Image (cartoon, rainbow, N blue to C red; front, side, top):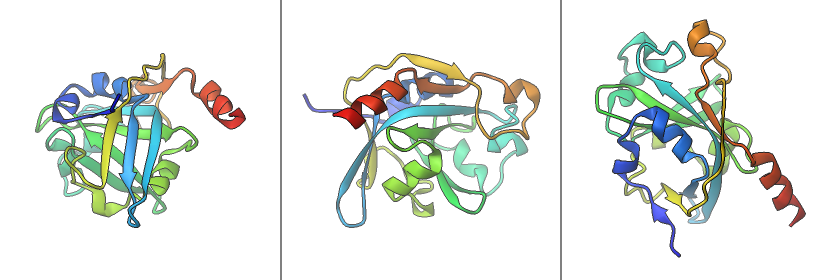
Length: 183
């Protein structure tokens, strides 16, 4: 059976629906040398609106955050701590800023590690996952059990948003890693 490539309809939903649904999907990137890299998403985080003090849009519309107000399926890439490129996908309605951070993939625990493996840099910012020859998200039918956790690295957010359970992880991610290592 051929994997289904996710289109705009998948992303054109509320971030709290899209974020857990992305867990278990595959990110497929084509590197500069033409080699394809496929990573299984094991963890995501939801960022939802100007009221979410952990969301970049909490400061309003700026040149940097304008992408969050855009079309569902748009890629939002930013540099974290001047070191790591982090990748998100915009979800929901235009002008309602929300996005899903790709937090971890199988064998790449951390958003900077997965973007490095995929060759993600600023050039991907504002592109779309839909119809993109460099990167796409596929569904191969895997449906993990989802664990809800607090988001990571947002000590600056107000307590109600710092402690909210908007990180979604494959509950079986550690077993999958061990299984793969022993195969």
